[in-house]
Length: 113
Length: 115
Image 1 (cartoon, rainbow over the protein chains, first blue to last red):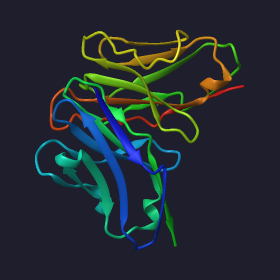
Image 2: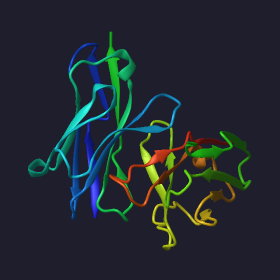
Image 3: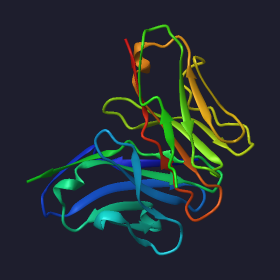
């Protein structure tokens, strides 16, 4: 069984401030972990993924996430928020190559000018 | 190359009518997913096809919902006797069998409105 918990359905940050979106997972096998972003009225696109290589993963648009097995976490960060980062962010886990992907409930990021 | 496509992009139907939503995955992708996203809600898993294996239908909300995937490619999600609570955006995603990470590639979605 696998699951994902995203803490905070809404997060607001000031432009230029640190972005931190939290994701905790559970998985009975070594997981694949993903962050997706959904801009208004668009589909989801992959931000970054963890596949058991480097624990610090860099993605598009300056985002990165760190896999911490001891904390079962995969938090998403960006040093300096930009207005264009306003979107909904989804964390997802896949417990193996043939298992379905499980998504978190999403976090809406608001960037305040 | 071409991404995941879905049709129609918008569908308005009357309560009680049947609707069919289509998904064309990326060529060669063996996994295909359907999700539902209601206004202000997260992604609700509906069904998962992986190659020739029996689909995982555990997310289908009622027997009014069904899906098939023909020839391991195109998929159709059918909703019979639509209800107003079926109004949502229906997202399709495909994923390769091999490669690093098995990430999903999403289509733009079909916005279904039941009046």
